[in-house]
Length: 348
Image 1 (cartoon, rainbow, N blue to C red):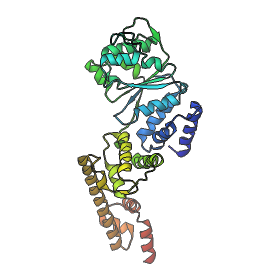
Image 2 (cartoon, rainbow, N blue to C red):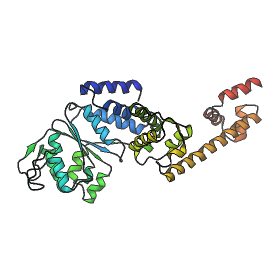
Image 3 (cartoon, rainbow, N blue to C red):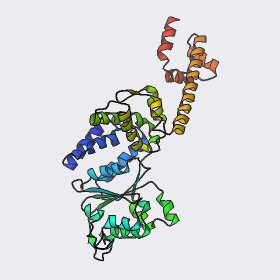
Image 4 (cartoon, helix red, strand yellow):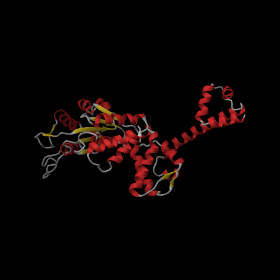
């Protein structure tokens, strides 16, 4: 995605929102501008396509891949951007808490003397509600959600009077909902309702080309926010790109913030990362990269040696190495040897 398209998207967001919401433009830049990988570009394109529709969206991705941010961007690019964007996570809640959080509760429904509570659906009226970890909803709460999606009606906990809310639903999960349906823990009708427009958000390790730009982005953010400058050695950057990032983008952002506190105004060395990353994962991948780099260097030396022995004539060197002239040309280009070959041939 080029810079012009990114800026157009930011300007489009400003127009659709009508005003700048705290941090949303910066978050938008981090989500859209740092995307060299095809899988992330595909997710971004789907977000653009679905934003102005009324379709229910299912965001699928591991913890830390940016599901909440993606949901918020869909909301901000929609015609509901002036209304509330709210979220609720089902994972840590009991069935009663899930129902109360989504639909609200009537007096004394939870405990004697409790006042009426407004649930997230009513709070998000005319706006967007992001239900994360939807696979964790109990079957009873799933049934209530199915009714709402069908009829736009719901009943608060302990109440028999239906209420109505105009809310766009976006859902998120890190689980395979099809498997949950087969296991009987997720309703099939709800699956077909929320799975109309799935968008998969890739793991950070699936988009390694985005890691170094994200490091620069988050480093600039901590400089603006905390006045802490961060620099990294080339070896440290190489290790960070090789790391598997089980916590995805969120883990990377948290790491940059911690490093800014502990190591301000000092180049970050590989050893400085050890308290914050998984050693086994880190060194396994680092060792693999070291092996790959060693093999590349050995191949480069063999190509140069063969060229030297054959007066820098590529056809002769290729024959000696048992490869085609085309393959030799590729190796010369890959190792950046064209200037050296041209120089030596001119001398001879």
